[in-house]
Amino acid sequence: MSMLLSDELVQVRVRVRAPDVVFVKGVLEASEGLGAVLAEPRTPGLRGAGDGRDGGALVLVAPRSRAQELHELIEDLKRELGGGLWRDDVSVET
Image (tube, rainbow, N blue to C red; front, side, top):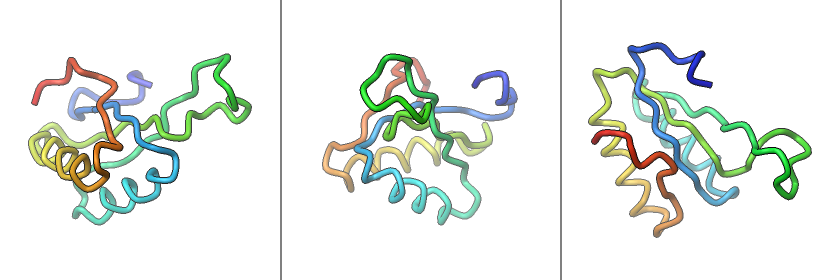
């Protein structure tokens, strides 16, 4: 997926419960053009992997100039979802 993302975008991999995907997508879309939500391709061999997606594995992307806002939104979502959101990519700078 990194081939599709330019150097001008930051990406943060997160995982949420499958029912929370629509909520996360709605919050990000309502955040005045902050970024976008992309579905992470599913790892082969996972249970239910027939459609090529892992229901709660997401990539949140935003312009580099708005990286701090994206990270703040992620922290807000963690609180809102009661710990039901966690970062897959711990190497991302905050």
